[in-house]
Length: 123
Image (cartoon, rainbow, N blue to C red; front, side, top):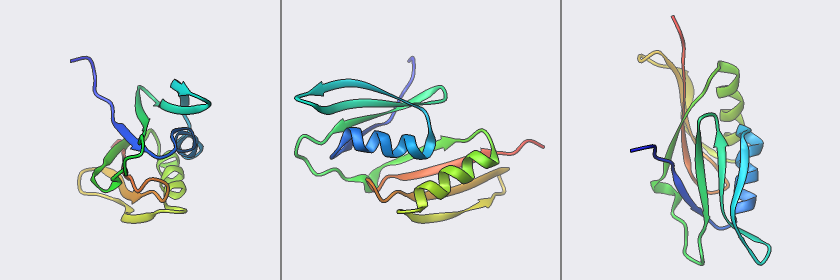
């Protein structure tokens, strides 16, 4: 197997990709656009990416989605956590853990996706 990437169904692909890019950075790659509407895009983050696809009239159910982000610094994890919680809901406050990571979980207000954030501190 080469790799695996999350494939998230949303009501507005372009708006969603730009929302997450504004919080996390990265680069958006448009894969499919029809009649001026983005139907499929990727948000490239580090060595991975998240796919966003149009809902095509179906109701997206974000409550079953968890995406893990491995952050590179304490500054980065705090920035992303704070950005997502601004209009979202904190499930687990950002905290030091027994497994050596700064860890938190937040459900964003845009698509109700829960983001699991980790920054593993070096000893």
